[in-house]
Image (tube, rainbow, N blue to C red; front, top):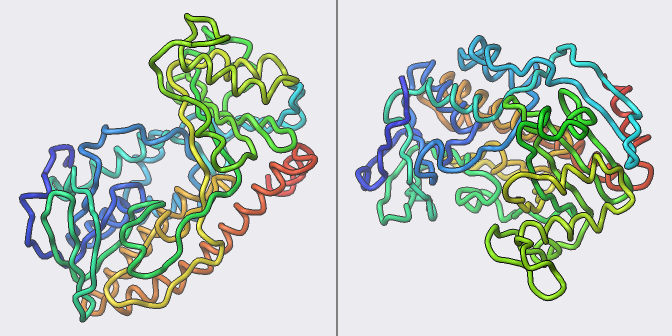
Length: 402
């Protein structure tokens, strides 16, 4: 079964759904899949026009106690095992001079790496045709009383639902029903880059990165990489910076240099040179991850919700994933928690088919302490990774939690 055929939202105006999921990310899909396993139908509304409308991100390490547990509940564990990236768990920690200070080999532990796109495809293909309404951008929602909600779409359509699940990410349109909280800038800015066919076209950098993840850190900055399943190296250039710093750099891919720049420089070349001024005393192989990057550079501000974000039980609505507990990526928990949230919420709804309020209460009772722990860990890791002596501290963390 495949959901890849598009069902446009406008054909569902004035519809009522017993359960509606807003967002077809990993968490929303996990919720819909586990509900389906229990014979319960859910409607998923997704703003993207199709499954391939935009890149979904790179590699994920899927944890045994969270992401893998969710995939078992979804009946998709064997499909998950088939997409594991062999050797992807290898880790290297480097100084800015390229010296390897710690290395874990590629042997597989309980956190195998997979490509996010492959994982999302497995979830998509496990849902009945028509489950997902593609191109359905939610603009707002309001309570109707008695736990029911009305949801408005950008094309003017509306629908109502008995159980509204906000799985719509950092800037959730459902969160305001429950909480006034909004994500705040963490002080860290990313620029993402890629080296394609790294082993043959960028051999020195590929050898330095290794077969899994690499962390090169110095105070206030870092170069973090993953080797992808297609042989490319995905790089996150990270800096502690003011929130408006990225907006001072032009990351578009058209145009030519002006003034003192060489006329043939593209805008991307100029952006690379600007980034490289922050890494002048770094090893040339690390600098090459920026200088030789293929294609456009992608700027990204890192935001987070408050570590202790929670809300009062509100009839008929709840949140999961980033909508509930957006955190920085420095604990590796975001996707794992989203998967577990979706599976646990769906399992609770299946266990209380006539009493969704009991299901939502049980789900949130586990959600809040779990997300509080992970968000706290993520915030603490961000602080030391971009503070003094980060390499020593990260090596200590890795060796104390192998």
